[in-house]
Image (cartoon, helix red, strand yellow):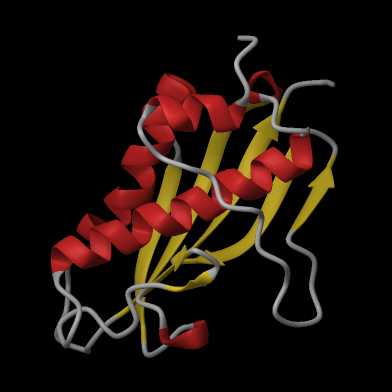
Length: 157
């Protein structure tokens, strides 16, 4: 594949924003051998928090899925930053962890997580299929509804 990651995303009608900078004392990603560990990415649009609130309260399932997709785009932005925007450096998306701000009664976190999971498969095909957890939490940074972190296997540069 000679296509860049940002070009592949553009083929889907989407745009990668600049990779988010850390909000505290951590780095956005760490590479250890061929594994790339990406810190949690929240749903952002134009650099601002998007889909603020909780599922089961003021955020609909459809908006939660869209929030997870935006957080997934944040993951892709970090992959692009780590690889020089090289799609061919991604061997596999190994794991996603999806955190969903939700009320105690809300129980569809896995459906919300599909917003990010489906995006990975759309971008990487079978290499985008991954292990995943999706859990409900009381709140997330900046009040967003969804945050996603990832582990990615890279090819040799």
